[in-house]
Length: 113
Length: 116
Image (cartoon, rainbow over all chains, first blue to last red; front, side, top):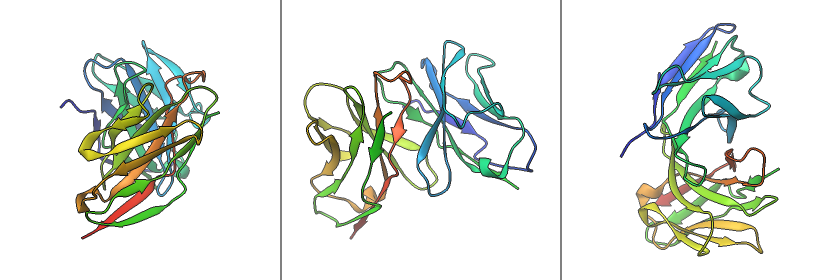
C-alpha cells in the first residue's frame, strides 16, 4: 500500500536556525497537510495545500512558517527562525479528495536546543 | 468551530473482552468523523470514517464505530480486544460547512491498554 514518507525522522536544530522538513505524499493525491503534536498534547492542524497554494492555515502557522511543493513529488515545511516552542512531532498528510481519509506519514521529531 | 472530546485518558481492558473508546463532537453542520490509531514512534493510521449512510461503520482490524447524532457521539468499539490493539487512539472531526473544509480537528487521544 502506498505511504506518505517523511525525512528526516529526527531533526535537532539550534534556536534561531532555519529548518526544512520534507515529505513525499502519496503520488496521486492532490491535497497536502502539515500537523504537529507537541509532546503529550493533541495533534494540531497547521496548514493545507491544494493546487499549488495554501487553502487554509491555523493561527500557529505564522510568518515564520512556509510550505512549498518544489516539484511533482515533494512537499516541504520550512521554519525560518526556530524557537524552543517549535519542538514537536511534525506530521505530513495527504488525500485524493475531501471525502477520503487523510493518510499520515510517520512524522519528523523536531528538537530545538 | 468544531471540537472533539475524548473523556478518557486511558482505557484498560482484558484480552478477549469487548472494548469501547468514547468520542463526542461539536460541529455546526453534519460531521465527517474519523478514528486514527498511533503506535509508538509511528504516524497516525486510519481506522474508519463516517460521512453519511449507515450509523454503524466497520473499519480495519475488526474495529467499528457507531454514529449517534442525538448524542453527538462516535464511539469506537471492538467485540474482542487483542493485546496488539494497545495503542493511542484519536477521534477527529471535519466540518464540511467550515471554511476550513479540509482541516481535521483531533481529540486529545485515549490510550488503550489490553492486558493478557
